[in-house]
Length: 397
Image (cartoon, rainbow, N blue to C red; front, side, top):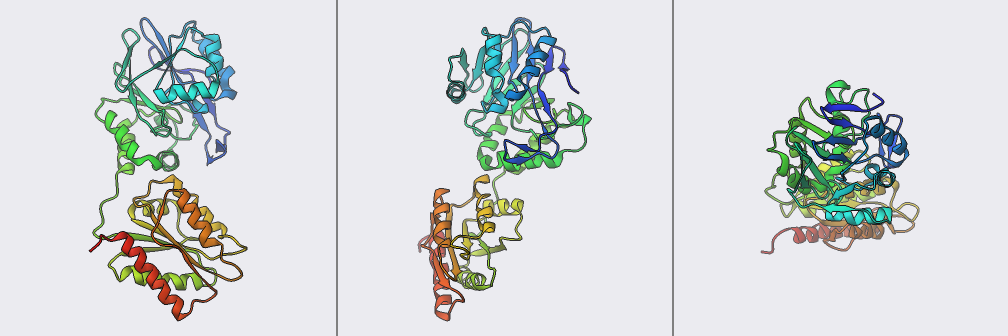
């Protein structure tokens, strides 16, 4: 598929394909490329364009509109202002100065800063509609899916949801629809994990607005259009964004890195201190825990304890790699603590504490560190360290 594609009579896909892309925004691997989906919707009286494409594809995007004989555009709906959605907007408005940009209030603010130019805008509220003549666009605000400016656009007459980044995937197949391409469920789940997962509460709020709509087709901004089982995609987001079930007692995630066993020795006694108060401790070695399991554990536990040695005046790379995943989830608890052993110097504990504070964690107690192998006195200090963490998690007697 290279040109335009008719989705329904008078509704066309006019986006761009990027099959050779290997890393999206220099952040996320894309084994099968991606697409930048944009849609032209014609009513009896007015024409709307839903999003544009990334800037390098501007010329081919505008050519698609020309090929469809588009001479007048009334509305350009911007569900989300990130440049992969708005890269062609400036040039489009130069060619079609009659167009009004439809967006959220946050979207309007972002557009003015992105383009540093005046443009005609219409800021819409949740549930507001625009009548194109025989076709209606209705807007549902969906902030933080995955920017604060995001909204969905619903076309009730055709039962189509233009869902922006939600329900999307970085996948560029030969066909346009999900039943025309190979299985991409892995990319669909990967996209949720890396883009949507940090905002699970917002996902639940947004999905609640559309879950009861009679949706027959979901048109996301990236990847195949979902017509085989659109409700299945929505149900997946409901499952993945559901809050973890409550635990009977506080649970603690203890992550350890211990090249010579000394930090893990300390961890055993910290754990004793925690468990003596009835807390459940889930201990994982940093070098073996997978990213998906780590995200689940962070959401299921009430506190995070990082056990790290100091190597070359720093926390080792596996520790920093693990900490880099913390911003990709919304942890159940925001309580943390850090400890570890060291040889020549002991900077790592303080460095990790500063990183956790930067991520808005609250330290249950100041970190501790001991040189080389812990003594019996050090082990007792570790148990007391666990006592203090427990005291921060348990209700006062």
